[in-house]
Length: 387
Image (tube, rainbow, N blue to C red):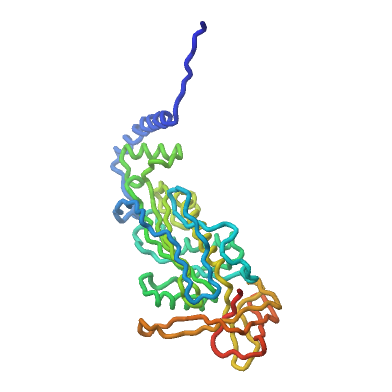
């Protein structure tokens, strides 16, 4: 009978405990020297004591699609979220069929969008790391994602934003209309950064002996589980139709990542996007841009027109850059402004479809010349709509 030699088997948990023991032994001698020089000093950019952010499972992740007074509006079909990732829970759309009706010839026309500077809910939560550029950088990231991945949308960034997020709905509509007129766009995307706080700032900026050893273990092994240096990002976005101000999308997004740097690197630096937290934010903006693009895709192409009384020929603010061609035919909607029945000195904008159509005779990169069907004359404010 030959002797049987037992095999040595080490589980992953045993290996992690062994590594943690070695790290604690090594870092104890280092931290003892550090402690002789005095306690750790929290950097000047941490000027607050944030409260640990409790996990809120009641965050509204539903998409609100406005349908009032918008021509050809259809909302995308939704399916329940099936993933269990700890980041943002998003509404998934049916792939390959974003809208119930894809029969329109003008559905792929490029639509214009302006992304405004975001508002800030709690400015002090950007102190850690000096991340005050988030108000302009997050919109720039969303614009870049839209520009790279969705050719049917022509996004731009506006360095100004909404005056405030606490205005009434009618005031928000008016602001969206004003911004759209200035930027000459069909849609306006705005947002509010509500929270960028750390759940436990001392774990990064003033760790005790055990936490220093644990931080070293996480940095060496890149194991994120049980790492306490968590930082959150909570924000909300609103997409509005620029002609009517109607709300098309209103949604809250959130994510979190490990913030393990003590330097004030700033939001717009390459070093920021090397952090785990920076990568999570970049991934979140990609998800936001996808949802925004899906809602815009289900809206018809609309462009303002300039017409003179008594003239059948009009100028349309859309051209070859939007995918239009000579010989195309567009519907005509009249913009009707009526007073509100519930608010003083407040107007509501409605779109009323007319039987008359527009025929494009000359198409240039940014504008077109159109003829009114039957030589009719236009009096008032109208929009050309691709249906």
